Image 1 (cartoon, rainbow, N blue to C red):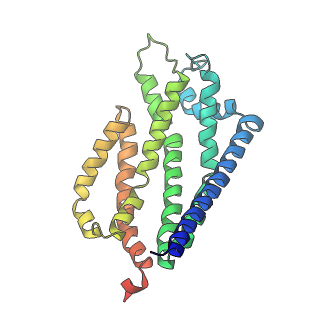
Image 2 (image 1 turned 180 degrees about the vertical axis):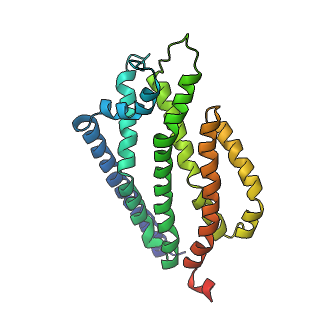
Length: 254
């Protein structure tokens, strides 16, 4: 390999690193600006945490409040929640920066493959988080509160509550990615739609096992996770053949 070729490779590699750094900085700046606005201007970290705590507060007896056992916990926990909200709000911009960095190296059929996956996976994850917050938490917290003995006073710790909510939102967000996983597996040729249909019964059993592991031990929350997982699996089976047809390379269509 000549010196000119080596220098060109080095220059290309360095230019890609610079471009990556630029995209990361642009994404981080927007996340930081949105965080500052939410934290210090409107609506404020306390209000954001109050909104997050609403499902639990609605399930607790009237007049009950959460507790904070750490010295700086009342400050740090709302700040963490605000950072997570800032990232979700700026997610479209972050994904755009990712796409802008990757797109120039892709062929047309590859762009048709990646763009829908990035968009759909983001939308599905947000839908999973929203489903968890608006439909699951209220039922789960009410069940726990009704089950608790009348001789105890339920006063959840705000940090433990945040950990629980984060785990549940992550579980439901990932669960809602099932159609994307099915589509990718079929598009890469790792498995056929017919084979996935054959193992449907195993998937249903696996869905209920996963739901039993990641959710609280009540039947409602397990059903809330297992049933969408099964339905989304079926959606993936329906969408996969269409996606494969739409994203074929020219030589694959011959």
